[in-house]
Length: 322
Image (tube, rainbow, N blue to C red; front, side, top):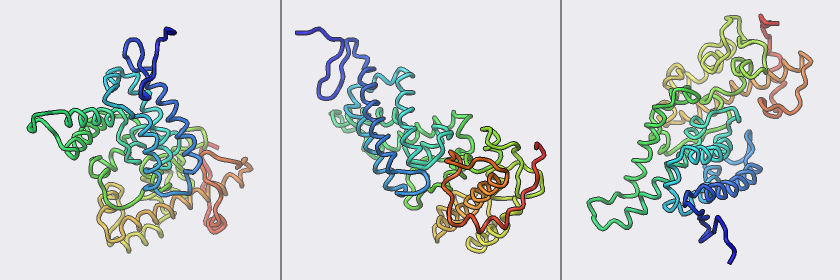
């Protein structure tokens, strides 16, 4: 016999102190390989829809949560929770098509990916329910899922940082998680995270000289709210949306409106795709006119066939910082 500090039994790595830290490390290494492979067939701007992406994401979930009731106690250490979250974030970015600058809690909400540590805890509780002899102490699978969503909602309530904008649009995670229709798209994600072709965002990451809108003369910062609610450049698109919905567009009511049925989700998705798609085309035109290298951009998708249609509309206001 050869002494060892670790031994693998039924695909669970047991260490000398039963901390299960080596098991988590090995599981995450396998999951990273799966995420990398799946990422090749889930490009950000095209490809499979949200439903298929979420289905593919279950591969990584199954790898990480194998034998969860055995090693759940390892999540008492914050370090292990953070390690689970780091790999889950990579998969969630692919599911909801967000940029890599998007925060963990925002992309998990959009991708409808319950935080991995809560999933592990739920599976342990469900395992204990099956072994519980007292029927009064047992919980149904549905009840355990509801409790997990409640804990997730509590964690979101404590978050005051990176996902603030997403939390304002989706205040109740359970309603978003259990919705029966509508799929998140590349442009909807930009709206709901606030990371995309907006001058305020580009300036924050040193991709633009000024956060001010280049498409109108108000001097307002080019944020999601300004682009979709106030920018005069897109007044025509807002009028078309109002005619379809029968009311004026308001970001605060966007998500409830989309859930309302009657084609509201498709109308909102088309409106957002039209507005942000035009901004992306115009940003490429601006960079080309300024003599900047366009190349492969982490901010802009590949040039589309509609770029020429927007070029004539582009009359940028000179930036005050130039």
